[in-house]
Image 1 (cartoon, rainbow, N blue to C red):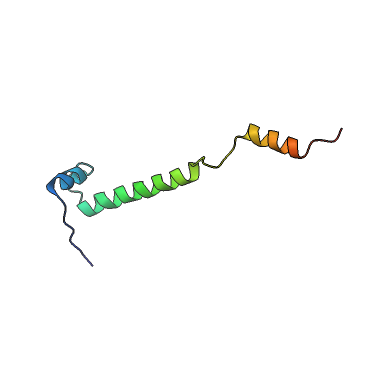
Image 2 (tube, rainbow, N blue to C red):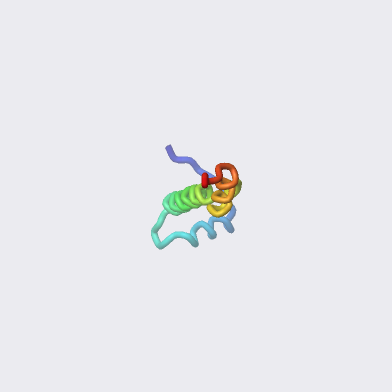
Length: 69
């Protein structure tokens, strides 16, 4: 099924600037979408919110379970 979307000429030109000669708008948008998905996944996987460093983890573990001497 084919659909039509309305774009301003300015946005159409911006999208076209990501393509090469004879590349369709569909292919350009599909490639941009794939890149955005990969970037979104990368940001999700590399998010360091709610994390601690390995050194901090080691200090925490050692304080909770000190080694027997």
